[in-house]
Structure formats: structure tokens, C-alpha cells
Image 1 (cartoon, rainbow, N blue to C red):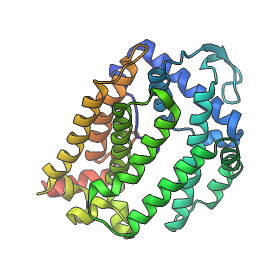
Image 2 (image 1 turned 90 degrees about the vertical axis):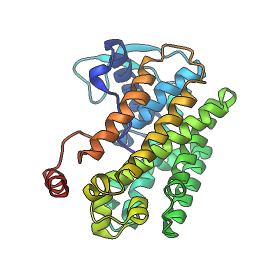
Image 3 (image 1 turned 30 degrees about the horizontal axis):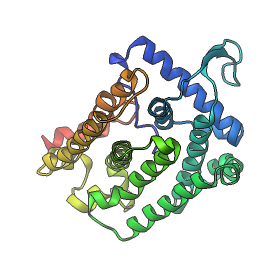
Length: 298
């Protein structure tokens, strides 16, 4: 769940870019306050966006002021102050990183050393926010069990991750939760799982690891999937998710300006989907191997 939820920067207002950067620093400070300094290394764009939208939906005004931190120790910068919502998001971020490396270890990847940086922070999460730890633990376990069944259903494969995000946001919003907010975050969690699976397609084929797109369509590589007979089917999956996001978003009440939220959900997600489908990673840097494969398919 890391690194895919981004702004579409060329279409981002300066005021929203400043707000996003301040919220990013705020979540980092929240992680430090709840989980310790080392856990800050796991800070993600995804959780930063959750901070933006959850504060808005909950009607929690964000206080921003110039400050220094461990990273920005010479020049001060605008940072959002830490509140209870930010602490909860810091706890979520640390729990997700810890389980990510746990999953990497189970898959045979190198992750033991990296996980040590978050072990102490995760213990703090379990003590300070046991409900958040439970939400992540139970849904990650459900995700693992689903993948063990080798299901070729794309919807079923993404259900546990989608439910985890929706359940956490219900917890964070409390009485402000609605069916539309629940559905929005469920769909966002589903998109995160599926775009990650699409991004990892070639790697999973090589390793023989679980991937719902591999089992559903059986193509030898991602380019064959995206430019072959199943191309429209894959694109329909993501267009259906974008439709659900737009529909649920239209029914939500925002207490403050929603330009930043709209930029991420309505422009950023399609932009990131296009990057992955074009053979580029989350950073936008295309891989030469993917370009060659695409040429061969054409």
C-alpha cells in the first residue's frame, strides 16, 4: 500500500501543494510522536493523502506553522501540527510498513533487517492503538488466506486490503462515517491493491508468486496483458473503480476546500494507472525492458 496515491502535480494549485507538503510533514511528526524516530523512515504518500481527506471530512481544522525537524534542521518549513487524527495515521503507517516487511520475509525476499527499524514502533502501536493494530492484523491475515486459495477473481483478491482501508477510515471518522465514505475508501483500497499487482506482474510471473491478473488472464508478461486480447478487460477494471470513486465522492460533505482531494482522486489515480500501464513505476521512470516488450507486441 505504498507510494501509489499521488497528486497530479502539473495540475496542482500552489496553495494545495503547500498544504500537501505541510500535511506530509505533519504525518511524519505524528509517526515520531507515537512510534519513535526510526519509524519515520516508512512515511508514505498514501497515508499523507488519508490525512488530507480525513481531516476535511471530519471537519478538523489543521494548524500549520513554521518549524524545524530532524530532516529539516537548518531551514524551517511549514508543518501541520500533530493532532489525534495524525497520531492514528502515524500508527497506521507504522503497522502497514511492519506487516509489509513481514510479508516480504514470508515471500523469501530480504526484509528482516528493514523490519527491525519498525519493530519497536509496532509494539507502541499495539499498546497505544490496539484497535488499529487489530484492523491491520486481521485484514492482512485475511489477505494472506485469500492469496493461499489462488483465487483468479480480481474482486475477491482485493477485498481484504480494500476492507482494511475502509475499516480504518470508519474508525478514524467515528460518527462522521457515512456509507459513501466507507465505499470511497473501500474502492481506494481496492485500487491500491490492484495497481500494485499490475506493477508487480512481471516480477510475480518470474518468482511464481501470487498475482490475480496472472491467474485471471495467464499472459507471459505485463505488455502481453496490456496490449493483447485482454487489454480492454484490464482497462475496464480500473475504469469501473474510477467511476465508483467519482460517484461516492459526489455524495460526501467536505468542510473545507476540496481541490487537493479532487486532484488526487480524479487526476492522480488515473495518472498513476497510466504510468503503470505504460511500463513505468510509481516514480514515472520507464523501464527499457518494458519498452522493448511493448514494441515486440506491436
